[in-house]
Length: 102
Image 1: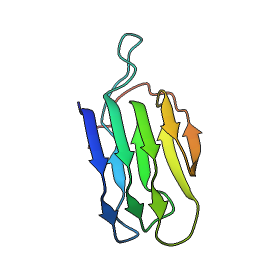
Image 2 (image 1 turned 135 degrees about the horizontal axis):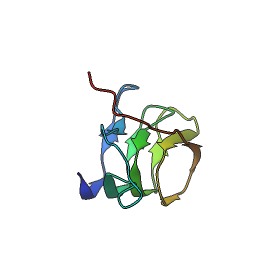
Image 3 (image 1 turned 30 degrees about the vertical axis):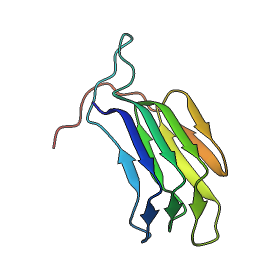
């Protein structure tokens, strides 16, 4: 698990430069999230969707900007609380019955 990660003052210069938090994880009632306390602030992104996160608690996305002039959307699936500004948040929910093993 990743806890207490800070990404600050970083330029993501291509459309493929994104932050992914997608663990292979089977949630339980006692542990519904895998990662937590992820802070992304004062960064610049060259994509419309800078974050894809699953099963992550406490995502903080503030004072970030788009270098391509488009509004950004965060895709959060089965995530907990988030603090965001200057973007849309697309929340998705899915039921997981088993792990998909590659």
